[in-house]
Image 1 (tube, rainbow, N blue to C red):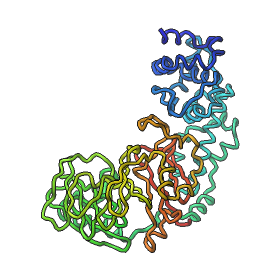
Image 2 (image 1 turned 90 degrees about the horizontal axis):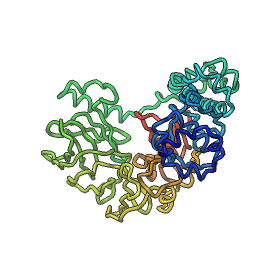
Image 3 (image 1 turned 180 degrees about the horizontal axis):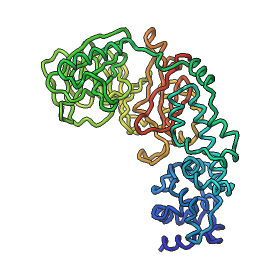
Image 4 (image 1 turned 120 degrees about the horizontal axis):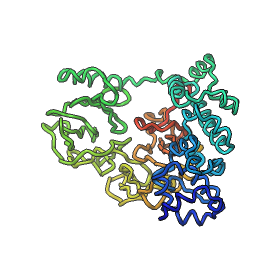
Length: 487
């Protein structure tokens, strides 16, 4: 009945004048209706904004999910409202809404404008949304300055469908900022900032060459690097050491060169974690055609099967103490073959070492930084507050342009939000004098700090160098910002 009612009230003057309480009372029905009839979404959303309904990020409805409105845009542009006897709304109230306005703007695909530029420019509200979209493109173009790879990615993206004389005339200043290109200036900017190819890590390069050579003697398929998603070579952390693996071969290195190498017995499908404890090396791996974790210690004759599935991420860093090495799931002692100790992510603080499991931040295990014993659990969702309480100077970091909504942490850990704090990939480690003091990631108050936060259409990195963002990419999720060679 509600659905039938909603289908007939769209466009009525009385509905346009309805108070916010009316729309609040039919919210659930409205959610279902928009999911089934997306052509009504832009009408209802603009009407809701006009009625004064407030929206929390990603809380409005599942069918549209408040992160894309591309289908409602297309319906609005093609006049499906008029075909149904509904007036096409100006969208001015939608454009003015602080939550849904930016969502609607970034959902405006430039490809839509090829045939509908006059329609958009004929409605001031839609034009305001277009100008918001153009401003986003201009900001993205500015961040790409001096990086030929970023420029190529930008120009090959949606912006290439934006050129239209009508759009050019509507906002010439922004269009100029988007498409202006001075070869000499771009080259000069790139050289001043420095190029990524100027970086080298001789110890890592030597370890990679060595492990590939070892693997090639037993499996020619592992001789030449392939596609990055399928290349068998892996890099592992064992802070402050690192390791590289290829097949069943592992090479451990420090900043100066190769420390040790070993071969895991049997047929190895993939190494998933390498941890050094004292003078020994612990390798977690999956046997070929298996999905369960096995553990091998250097100096032993064979591996040990744990029969536990490998299901999560390795993480940014583990932490070695006199008693062993602390990982996200507990202390690794010499000879320990407990399952799931290969999962690293820990945040080291003066008061505790906190383990971070993938996306489970409301009950993170705490460990004594001296003994590795359990100290219970901590809710790490409001991480700036918690880490400050534990003695880490995160308050000295500049969160940049991130809006206040980013720091609203819901009680429900499974809440569907437009913000994801990826703490399992965060860095929180004390500076090691003469070893990491000059790290390219910088440091703040004696700590290496980098916190990846996804918000809206961007990946953000908050760290000592500032706060940086790039468009979201499902294939690659950055975790750390580093200084370019030119600073």
